Length: 303
Ligand SMILES: [Zn+2]
Ligand SMILES: [Zn+2]
Image 1 (cartoon, rainbow, N blue to C red):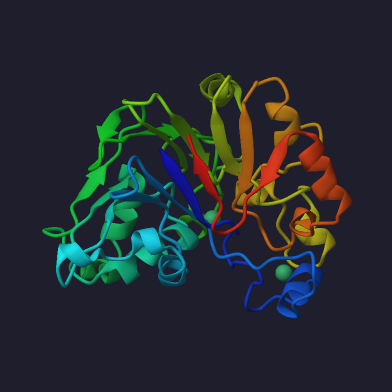
Image 2: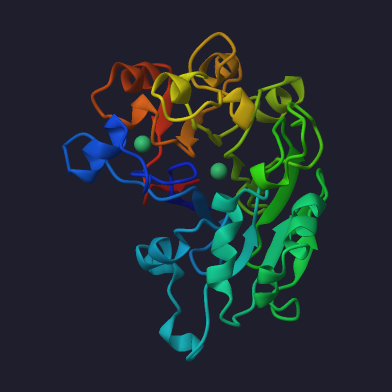
């Protein structure tokens, strides 16, 4: 199985267009030790021919131009794409807006939870994806789906929150329905398996059980500390309020994974405020000492 990180940043990307925080200012000026990143998405393939995208970010066109494997093959005629499927983990803009850039009439299957499919159906702009060409398939948590190319896809519920634009007056935090899901992709031939969880409010007992002993987990690395965006004057929201567990601290993901015996742990979906984006930061050293890697755009993993 081949896994390519198309985009390793959280919503807004790095640098974020309207942000002048220290990280964004430094990467914009080309300072050494910080690297630009596009918004969160992965591409996964069994054989390098047929690909599934996990989340479709607003940066999808740039990501595809930087990934030769996702270009049409000469032998496939004038109009084609190696992208056979797209699976999304929730309805956040940074995870679904890229679907609009895939509207040019080449077939693929779209997999999402019933909640997200309802949100897409309620928004007529997504009608540019003709259901006859792009079938919308509901993922039921715990049920495996065979993808074109032979990989198996399974959705599982994770503690999270609904997309910002779908929030009602009182946000329902820490719920376990299909508002936010994780995805497990496995290769039945080789036994390789990866878990992709770009948004997660908490590692509860059920999630810990699923991840225990895993070969590879790509996990929510949005914030280093819960108060980070408030402390930097960027936002009034904590990480918890945004449905994202932090890396550090007693209730952070580093501590939560400590006893899970996951062989390879990689942070994805990293917000531009996160100090781990600086190669020489103490925070980067801390997460690496704890056994974590920081994803970068173009990172490739073979299982
Ligand atoms: Zn996101
Ligand atoms: Zn910033």
